[in-house]
Image 1 (cartoon, rainbow, N blue to C red):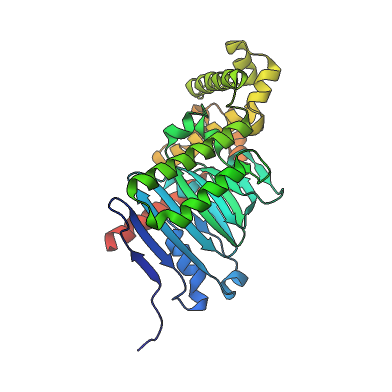
Image 2: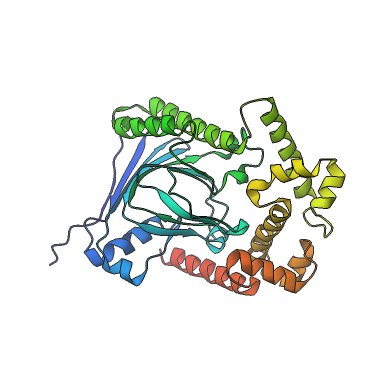
Length: 346
């Protein structure tokens, strides 16, 4: 007979229309706690523990609230290395926009792998993610509130919502203290609120978050920002329409849309430049096609997305995803197969 206390994983309805679930690792044996947490959050993101991490004490818990299609979580955890890889993205259906607001602790060493953007600057208090793009980050011991936000709300400010991915805000930036105060108040009072009040508070937080990131990107606030947003949308639509053409380049975009070079540079500076933006879109499309069309030759996918040679494509893909296209396809196929077998056993 064991005396171990079961891991806490309980569903408790609060007000009519509010679903609440609580999970904690405290009932697990010490050597199993980090693994139990990895299993719990694995449907969204991978926890990357080292051997020494598994030997250390670990504490984590999470409360999840849902009102209609809005989800809000309140998580406390020790230090974690987290990754959402392209292989995981290709084998799940999670496509939300996610905003992490740190009431305690912070996030650092954020790497947006498709655009090769690393951030080793001071830890950030707020992080925005597009769950359709890869990310790797180190989350310090923290308490973090997470909002899952509909794409339509993000798109009201960002003509290209994907551009919010990996952006960070620090406490000294405009609107950030207001956001943190609003979120802290919501987390304290949520158990006493009704569904309508929770819905309103979550939507208000989401609108504040999107506004803060829009202000940081220069995409909101005045007529100049509105014009910038419109131009960004125009360029994005042109690139999407011509993505498979081998002659698509910054020069061809300049010529087609009659924009000045400095204007185009400023629009895509946060993406590492327009050339990098085009390449990253092609690589993401290629990753999807490698999974969706397993019998199509890699070289056909490369040529179909405007790459001029197999070697150019392989080098670019390896830089973005740390593996060759063939290896990526095999790994994703193996993951899909193992999930299918697990679902059959269940």
